Image 1 (tube, rainbow, N blue to C red):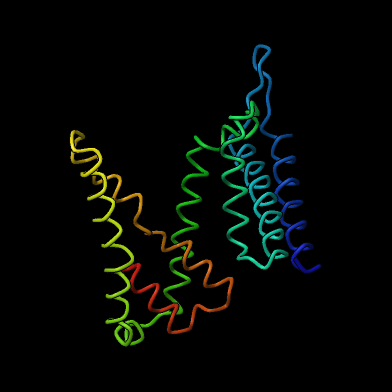
Image 2 (cartoon, rainbow, N blue to C red):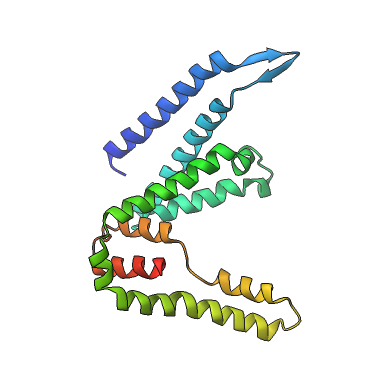
Length: 200
């Protein structure tokens, strides 16, 4: 990570912490021996923690010549499963409705950004290839997983077979788009084929 990116990250974290600390002075009140904290403070502190951890993970992956999003995903999995090690510090992140909404908005904005790089004529130009990739990369794994489940678990409900097929199907358009953006390949024909297949 360059010095400029580190400065931007540190500045963002400091702004979040300053806003949350100033809000805490205004919003924290004592009631009968308890403390009532504004949900805004919790969300801001959670965002600061998540952004810092994600950027550190992304920086490690960049140094290893891997896509930055890979480090962000790994750090997210680690934070989400710290409870298995007896650390409950970040457990509230999993059930926070505001963070869930913000994460969904982030994915929508990411896909919108990808859409800005893609035009309908470009998608039509690679339509045949995208259809072939979609069939081989999505439909085939689904039915293979379904078939293997039906063969080895014939007594199980058909929904179990569908579930096994679905787990083998790659559907993460957002992650695929983010990797292509990180690699600066979002405008290539290969990227359009991959994204077209994901849409199909």
